[in-house]
Length: 190
Image 1 (cartoon, one colour):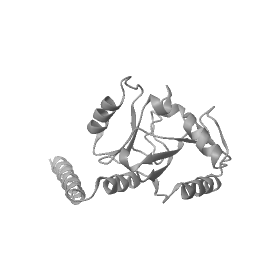
Image 2 (cartoon, one colour):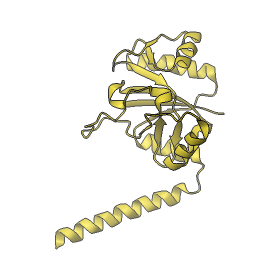
Image 3 (cartoon, one colour):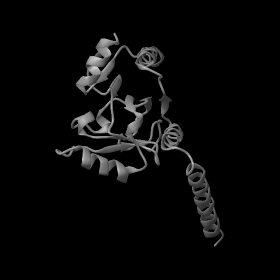
Image 4 (cartoon, helix red, strand yellow):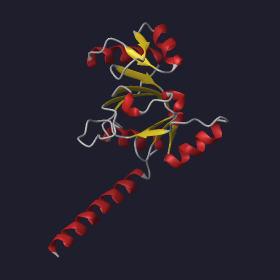
């Protein structure tokens, strides 16, 4: 009987703590809620002032991580990186840093939603564990429901392979390869 009492009292404490966090976030703008939750999930957040600062941070990130170049699936990033003289190559295996975009940033979870428009047919477990995501502030939405509604409005040809990732640090329970071990988000004001 003592076990059940302990179990339910811990559950109530966790529930109260979650509820208190929700109330604290209620007055914050959506972008701040996203950043807080994203960093809590282990993501690394950058807010470059302009494209020049973005370029210098991307170059510095290669040095910090010890990588030689970025990998890409989306052609737009190839041209962007070539233009700013950052080494880039087509994605071939699950090593290196994959650079790309996303559909939406989910504020409630601090999650990143991607689709076949960014990842083609690949699942998270088959892609590099190090990711750089470049997004704009108008991609932040409150929750997954809103993100799916926006995708529905945005595309006539509905994308496939919709994935949401919200674990950006290494864990022991990564049985499905869903976690992005190192995730760097560059948010550009739009």
